[in-house]
Amino acid sequence: MSKFTKELINDYAEKLLIGLTDEETDIILEEFDVIEQNMELIANIPNISEVSPMTHTLDNFEFILRDDVKEEGIEVDKLLQNCDKTCGREVEVPKVVG
Image 1 (cartoon, rainbow, N blue to C red):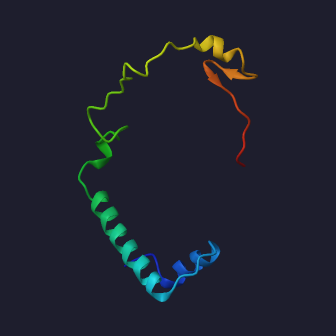
Image 2: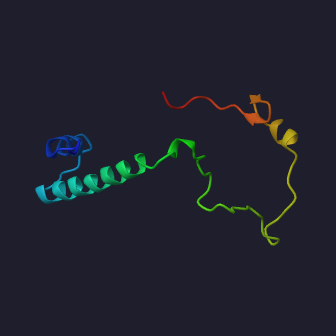
């Protein structure tokens, strides 16, 4: 049974200031059903908790700069001299989100 109902979707749509027709609400409900089925399939994969997450979509990901865009870099220590606050080799910035 789906956790999503027409009332719930219409409530979210109203909060987001989106006007949905009954047809659009039905389409969204169908999409959520498919998403829930796929999430259930993933949750039931044996030993999934033992698998390490991937950092890239490809197993053999390798980042190499092309020769035509490669240029000399500036030392990190020189760059950090322009910063007001640093933490090791990182720049500290003010918190902007509550």
